[in-house]
Length: 177
Image (cartoon, rainbow, N blue to C red; front, top):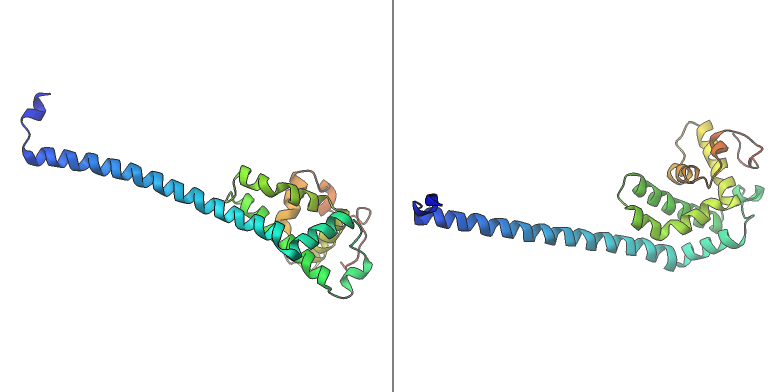
């Protein structure tokens, strides 16, 4: 305690300045953390709005849910509007699975939209489409566009673990590979 009696005014001002800076730093850290939470919430809101309120996305999800046999031999003969919409939805889900894979989406954030991704992965036509694309892209030695959603589906046991094996007993082969 005797140490404080030998201090000059400069010493006391320096100590006060250090205390004020520490309090300011703690306040800034809380503000920074709060702004990160707000940005993450806004980002999740964008994902949800696009998925649930974008007319094309909603129509595509409806088609997947209510027409389990949309992927047929004729699907690749002419690239239709539904083909574009399916690719768009799967690309969006693949990106979300990628964000989860690199841990840019927390477990709780991902769970908000997990149901839609799981429903999509469970669709027999989606699985057949992804299976054809996966094996076609392997034949031409190109990476499959939808690897993150495929890996997610396999990891979650929604897609059969034999998916990556070129077994024509799993799905009909519509592409030439």
